[in-house]
Length: 152
Image (cartoon, rainbow, N blue to C red; front, side, top):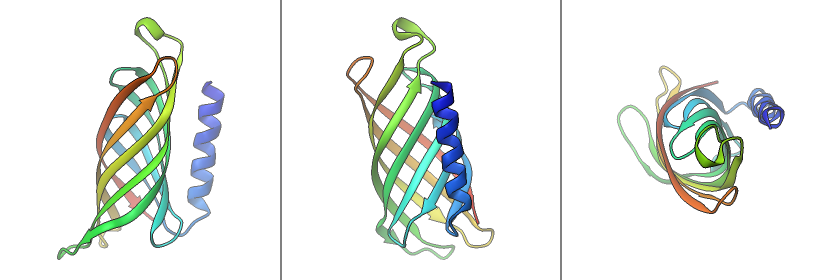
């Protein structure tokens, strides 16, 4: 399982280097860890995280999400504030409780705000994500986090 997670992380970072509209940074909350985003065009992007989850399942957290960017935008003096939503998958290796050693997997649906600053070239984001774990048992979870990423 760890090999799959590490290979997925390598693919995320390789794809980040292959695109001009990419950002890497951190997310704090549940989960807490590394975060990355790759712009596909002006309206869509791929987002992922390799983090540690402290919610219902404690363990290594990996997610990948297809985002619809700029669902709604508000102009500010510092830059745009954009609403986004998406659909993806979340995988958590469980390290405690009745399911210790198992893997929780299922779809996730985030809703968030992203604030793009242009000098310095960073983005600040906040996100709520509803997740439906299919295995090891069916369960609904809510992830929440805030973070910052450097665009390059």
